[in-house]
Length: 171
Image (cartoon, rainbow, N blue to C red; front, side, top):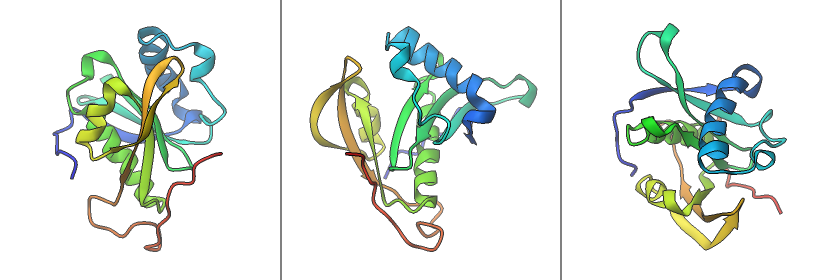
């Protein structure tokens, strides 16, 4: 069972069409500027069609800032999880991952997977993910494929009709 951390951010579902600027700002800061991932490798054709989440600081809604983002692909893959440096360790990443796993369960997935940067694998392990295969290189950074089962934390059935599916991976 994943740890229960009191989130220091509110997480909501987002769309590329409505929230593109905030999603891009966070991913640019974390992946392109901080981690030096080439910009051409960061943006892809999935962005307009996947489900995104955004994490916001607590406080007056007019003054809240988006501080984290992530996405759930139609294959059951969680990806592009990014939290601005000053908000890491506050429960923001945990809250986003819990929301992404809830979304996966609502869509009928019984498992999700991700490609964790090796330096972040411990974070995902604390959330119940387990290594699934050897380490590999992705955009010049060592990654570990990880997987875990999901189910709604509130106890509601998995899937819209209680049905379930496993991730379908490309290739």
